[in-house]
Length: 215
Ligand SMILES: C[S@@+](CC[C@H](N)C(=O)[O-])C[C@H]1O[C@@H](n2cnc3c(N)ncnc32)[C@H](O)[C@@H]1O
Image (cartoon, rainbow, N blue to C red; front, side, top):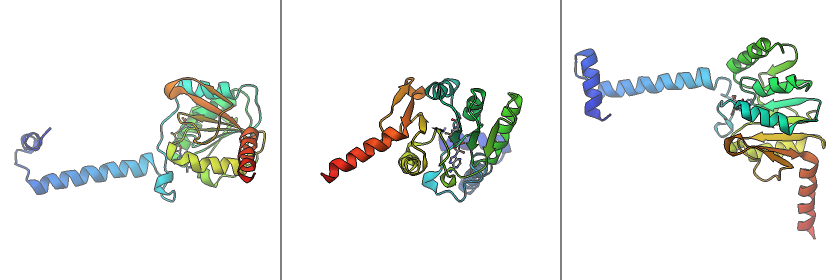
């Protein structure tokens, strides 16, 4: 809609013509309303997280959850979803016997929603959702990890995972692959694609590359 169109609609609503100043006020109020929704509903709790590390909420599809579970088949022990959203991946893991099944999520609304979803699925007590910054969580005892995050943070995440995870751990990335790691398995196509990485083989190939550089 062009400016004349906007004028026409606004004038017909209020009966009075709206000048440039009025339009500016409307734009300002809309911007403020959008910012308030963003700050209070979509990204609360993110004030202390640097802007480049902020990842918005986008839930995994049923197919994506199923793909993560396929890549974790035959495994057991602790399962963690970093940035767990409404808790669906953690819930799926708990239903397949992973224990403990833990989600880390900064948005308090999503943490509450996760508990409601777990309760409705009869899994209350089998899952745990913690309102914590994933960058501050220590991962030394995690054997199964899933990450559905943005490409902008994945390089930094590789360093964290490599520094903290035990040798036997498996990382499953959804939507975007980890940028420099070679996956052990992949599943699905397009947006449903998921990649599994075994930490031991990632360490071995990183060690091999370093040795190659030293020769
Ligand atoms: C793309 S969503 C994925 C949600 C969920 N894993 C799923 O697949 O359904 C990313 C989630 O990570 C959360 N998140 C982003 N940065 C975070 C941080 N530093 N600590 C904890 N949670 C974070 C966001 O609030 C968002 O819910």
